[in-house]
Amino acid sequence: MITVYQNGELHFQNKIYKCAIGRNGIKKKKIEGDGCTPAGMYTLGPLYYRSDRIKKLKTYFNAVAIEKNMFWSDDPQSEHYNKLIRFKDTSYENLYKINHTYDIIIVINYNTSPIINGKGSAIFIHLAKKDFSPTSGCIALRKECIFEILEKLNITDKIKIISH
Image (tube, rainbow, N blue to C red; front, side, top):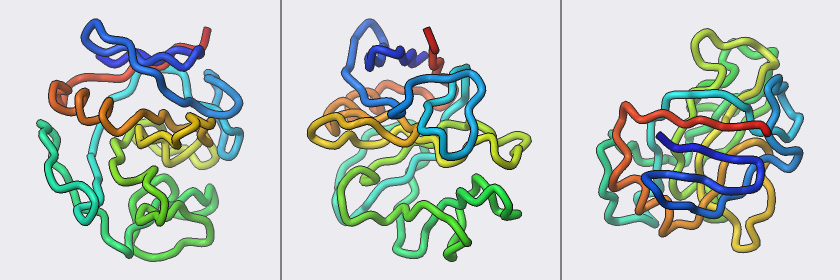
């Protein structure tokens, strides 16, 4: 189990990692665009990665290479809301980024079953910026930390995000 706290700590297998969370903290009632990381317990996966930037990935997850035409719909009015798409929706998150934050993405299965429009989308674990600046709602870690966690993380492990 991965546990994430409001103070920017992620705990996994008796180890503490520094992480970035949403710019407006952790919240129980997340809504699209609020800049919050959603509190709760969630399953994980799939795992996406940039195969042109990451050559070796030791993980139990099925790793899918990110292609230039991969996006994530964040338009609450779209029928594709909070899903991987291969075209540009009215509003979307580009998974093939110039910066390195999306070189590895582990999807946090938040608002996925069922998907409720406006409840929040594209909640991932991904790479942190060098200064650990806040995210729009994701959890971000150093590259070495994600590699270390992925080696031990089981596909049945869950993530618990705590709001207090």
